[in-house]
Image (cartoon, rainbow, N blue to C red):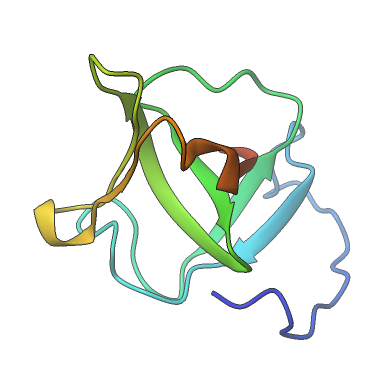
Length: 105
């Protein structure tokens, strides 16, 4: 996902979770079968993200939706639906990653 894409405001209705701060449309299938391309994700910036939760992460201008965990060396591992869609950031690279919020499932 590219942050330079246009955005639009939507009216909050009863179908939108109360804890959602914003929504985003998933543009890839990296989280299949849990989340699908074209699906609207609701995100909370206030919810505490626990290990193995799904979050939105900003890395070098690109937004990624992944489960996160930390390995025994302190590296950040962003897990996709399968091994091909994982992102590994060692201790030095972790500072390049910003968590935008927790995806409300």
